Length: 437
Image (cartoon, rainbow, N blue to C red; front, side, top):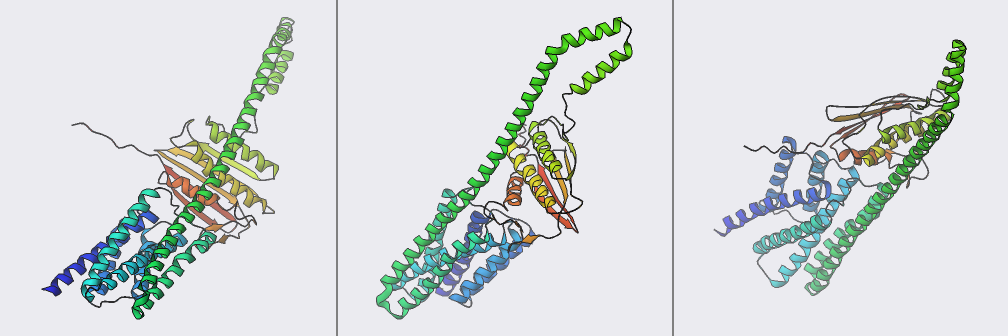
């Protein structure tokens, strides 16, 4: 009877462990995919956990490595975060789990419970403790985890949990061989757990710093747009005042020409006035009526002309879009800035082609440009800046992806030969319909 109870409790604990790992991954990496393949992987992971826990009683370092590899595989298939963020999250999950499990195991061994019962009690208490930690992280860190992480940040933070796992295993082995060191092992477990919590705060600080820099860059872009728009409006207003001031004299001259029968002179005079007093600048390539989009495109267009870049744009959007202006500035501004920077490095045939349209609650932005044909990618497979100041640059495409995610959008990057293209699609957020029956 005792064996059946132990088996049942083991199966139940294995199921709870899978649910807990899944919840932990959701907190760190987001919900991810929910399809047949992901469900199959979670079922296989449950079979693995239940088998190693109840049939083979497989514990120790090899079990830890097996769990980490299995969960990492699931993260690769089901989560959208970067490769480094997936590795970082898996390490964090099992560092906390191992530390808590070791601390509880030492306590139970010190009390003196039978081997089978102590394992079940240890697993149960460990899962309860980890669940409390996950809930705390979920509430305290809600919406403050980035789904991407740089290689520099990964190296800076990941070594702490890796070293913690090693020292935790060593302290447990020492406490089992030398019972007098149980207290030392327990204290070491608490210290390691606190250290990893501090590491979470460190990551949160780094993440907030990166976000703050991105926001500052956005604010600078918005200020530049507002300044340029204000200058253009002032110039237009001055032109209108000048025309109004001179209108009486112009009309008097025209009336005299007409009275004298000099219609050809009057026609030439009118044409000169029209050419001199145009309110619409021929240098503007975008005239949709959307102030944010027009200002940004026309500003980048003037920059491109000065650099000898052939810039063509077809923009068909309404005067108002159902997207935040700051997100439009992030996406369109970074796309154009990256395109100009790429064209500058090309000796011949510098060009930028912009297609932008809004239809059926969907905004599509496609930008093509010439480039040298050389691109750099980081370990996660993402494009990397070629500038020396990598800390302040190289966040363009990442900022675009983060802004697009807010609208469940897609970002597609293509490069063929000397042509580089980025397509961004944003979907309007549709509110749920409430039907009263």
